[in-house]
Image (cartoon, rainbow, N blue to C red; front, side, top):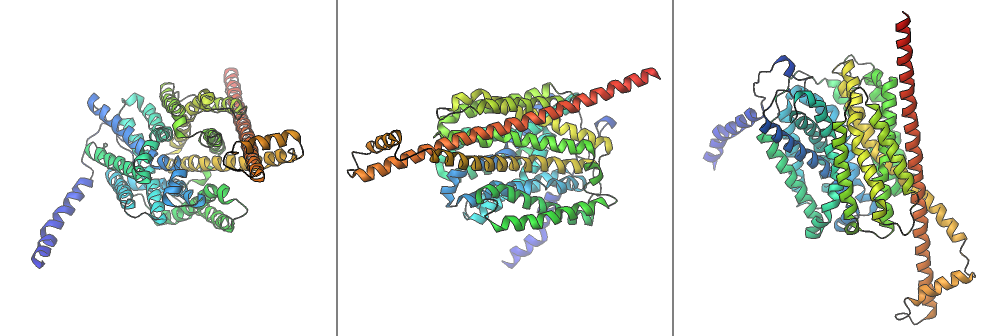
Length: 567
């Protein structure tokens, strides 16, 4: 035993460590000036033969779908997982919330990690961590391990989203690299309808374990793929400063607390749970402290002066509103059909249409991309959501999935059509100010998308709950036990169970219970219609706001042209 240990320590371990070090090291490449990386931390942009371009595209799709499915498989099956894992609604909601808590701010460190250590260590470390935790959760089945896997999935999801962008950009010729960026940001958005399509079959095989096995398989495939075909190396430079970690702790902690409040608030209810108030009490000073530290730094991680400029504030407002109104699909339409008794098997065609529309949105966004007119597709997308949501607001208790095919296809198309131009709008302005502003923009973009999505579900869910209570009270007040029509309805309901209940009082009680269920269902339908109208109003206001901005910009350009002509 001692001899074996000595041999391992003297020969085998050093050899293994040397191989790992050589594997993670960036190889030496030579690039022409136009092929060099745009900024440290991003890969170079050499020309590739067609076969390698196709391989880059395939790996980009794989890692993009892997990053998106990590959270989508859980989010769309919360009810089933709740029963399988023995959790209550408040506990099961922590799974997607934990994903957002880590996903939303980890890019702050990831960008500097890539800049200082390169792309390959970044890729291998995060994918390996993700795969190991997912594998461990198959054997440790408690609530804490599930949260740990979701948190790791959030970090890996952020890493995989970046890799998807880079691989898709390498898959296209240099003149189309921006189109590759649009494809890279859009591919992970197709994960939710894809998860809804095939996750019922996975659950039928082996309950929650099948979901995690599938997630583990995707992680291992992605790890193998990015190891076989690596990205061109990046330029590296010392990037980390000690104060970066202080800012990240304050910023990441505050954003995680905000995410926890938004993810749990409508379930445990905002005013009924003390920890929500304490979380906000802690999050707000931490957020302010992070901004104060960054405002006075020579090399800030977050450029607060640029983030507070008019263009960036308007961008943040519009993007948050877009994410809120796009929650109509994930929360509103699926919630309405569930209330009306539809299950996943009866909505498979709807989800297939949503997936096709999402893919079409990504493709159309890349094909029609015009860097001079990035606001127009954003305005078009939000305007289409306003029209579709207003059409959905006329749903009844007879509404079924086929009646929502067109409107939900429009919303799915809009969700992926707007995202690429929105990213390019902010990225172009960041690059105009210098490469250092990119970190600030990525932090902002992550917050407005992730927190905006959580906030959209929280807002719509809260509004729907309040509206349901109001409609339920109004319906109950209009029901009088002495009304002959009400008595006839109760009697008809009781007669349905007459063969198993001989007691007339029990039959009447059962009839009254059935009437109460019907009233609750109608109140929910009316509440969802109100929610759809709220979405339509918010989307319409955002569209008008964007139109006014475009009109103002056009007026200023014409006035500047006239003044130039006069001179």
